[in-house]
Structure formats: C-alpha cells, structure tokens
Length: 430
Image: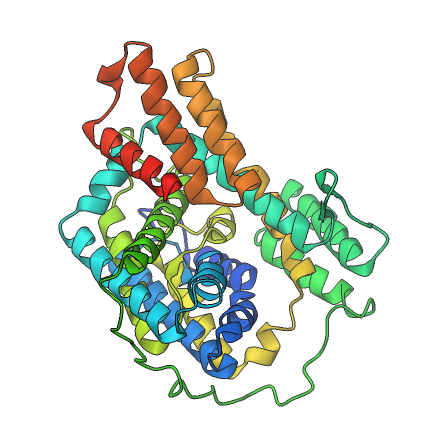
C-alpha cells in the first residue's frame, strides 16, 4: 500500500527509512508544542488551548504535505512569526490577539489564491540556481546556530554579540556527547544514526538531571480549543497598520517556506536540472491550508519547518516521512508528557550535524563569477546572523539583481526578480 501510494522505489527509499526520517523530524521540532503556548500565551490567550491548536495546525498541514504533495516536509506554527504575532502586533501595537488571528487568517486565504494561480510557484522558479544552492548552505548555518545556542554552547554577549558559553554544565555535556555519538554512528554508516543520537542524548540527560520523567499521567485528553476557536475580529482590517501587519506575515511566511523547500530539496538532490522542485505548488498549498486552518483553531502562521532537513538527512524522500511526523503529532495530543521529556540538548546535536550536511551545495556555486558568488555569500551569511531565512533570501536577491544590472548582464535576470527586489526593498523601508 505504502509503495504504490508514495512510490517508494521510484524515490530509492523504503518504509523503515521513511519512518525513521519522520520520527527524526518530529523529535527535532516537537519543541514547538511547548514553546508556542508560552509565546502566544503572553497575549492573554489560553496556553492549554494553544497547545491543542498548535498540534492540530501541524497535523492538518503536514497531512496535506504527505498525502497531496508526497513530499517529506513537516509543518507547524513558525518561530519568529509567533513572536511577531505576540510581541509586535499584540503587545507592541496594542491590538487584540483576536485581531492578530484575523490577520493570519487573511494571510492564509491570500496564499491559497496565490497558490491557485501559481504565483508562488512563479516566484520560486524565478530564484536563480546559485541563490537556491546558497539558501541550502545558509539554512545549514542557521539550524546549526539554533542547535549550538539551544545547547548553551554558544550564548549571547553584549561585547561580542555571541561568544562561547560555559561548557562546564550538564546541558553542554549532553549536547557534546550526543554530537560525538551521532558523528561516530554516521561514520560507521549506522542506519538511523540521527534518531539513535537523540535517544542516547536523552538517556545521558537522566543522571545529569536534564531529562525529567513525567510526573502526571502519560495519557491525557487534549485541552479544549473553545477559548480561541474561530475568534476573529474584523474591526480595523482596512487600516494601514493591518496592511503592514499582513504584508509582514505574507513576506516572512512566503520566503521562509520557499527557502526551506528549496534549500532542503537542493541538499537532497530533489531539484531538477533547471532548479525546479517537482510538486512545489502542492507543497505551497499545504502551507497555505495550514495557515488558514491554524488561524481558525487559534494559532499563529503555520509554515514549513527547517527541521525537516533532519528527516531528509535521515533518508526521507516521500510523503511517508511527513505522514509519520503527522501521526506522531496526533499521538502527542494524548501523550504530550512522553514527547516533551526529550530535552532541547538532546536534539541540538542533530541540528548541528544536519547543518554540516546542508553546506555541500556551495560546491555548485561559481565563486569565480562575483555577480554569482557575492549574492550567494550574502544569502548564506545573513541567515544565521539576522536569524531569518527570509532576510537572507532578500539580501541575496537584491544584490544579485543590482550586480547583474550594473555589470551589464541584465539578461541573466528573470523579470520576476525585478518585482521581488522592489518588494524586498519596500519591506525593509516599511
């Protein structure tokens, strides 16, 4: 059944590989179940209801990705977008969380229309192949930085912005031990090396007091979403502030999703010779449906997760990987204490290792051509330093257009790139 539906042999994979890949993806992104309620809860929303909404939004979007697009990517409410929702729109600008949910809902509807008319696919196809390879490498540095910071190996510092953290602490020990174990398993070509690395790190955390067994019942009914379900507010939707809020949601979600899809697919050799991702429109529709449904049940923008790179690195190539992740999100609704006992320090090594995997497409960049290499470099370096995939793409594409035009090579630039560059500049001005 799985073979026929997901075409496993065609994609040179099997059920076990896809399952392990889906499990790996889930474990590296399950933190959103704990983090999202904490962030959105600061707006006055019910954190317990947000937990359920987060899981439901992730389940529906990832199922569409699995069963409709047949691609190995998982989706959930996006980090950064949830912070913009809570700290900028609600706490900063003073709007209600109901108003912010309305903006997310409108964003989803617009994305469905843009996807239906294949405008988002047109945008993806317009991105130069050099930038697509750079996106993969930039995402690699970005997720490696997330892993290093989450493990406390790299920390914030006023004088130097970032610095080496205190390695003499249990969290760092777990992450470094897990990194070593995962590296050895990979070198020995052990199947499922990434997932075994997570399990080993979780076990190491028990005597160190980082991994905590659940005190409550392992099986729990999910909290009701009634306090946040379909809570839209249509006042002020025709204001300039709404347009700015909506544009920001649209911009960040579109290019975070595009960046993740293209970057991970580039690393997995899923792109065609022309740099296109087969089924991209279906994948973008999964993102649009997820965002719309997520707003209805009460959560911020749902987007394709960069942690999907961990599952792809584990060998995931089809929708069966995403289906496995979706099923685990369903189980998490009832077994949340079990899944949430995996500490961040245990998943950090996987993000660091996968970050190194994602760097390989830089070999395809022509560094002898400065109109190609400089935009590629800016794409790569901006993602971790600005902590944003979307901003990395923006810097890369703006510089690509300017360098090509001023060096007399405007024929290398797709007409859509001019429009996107104008929108990027507008975004930074706003």
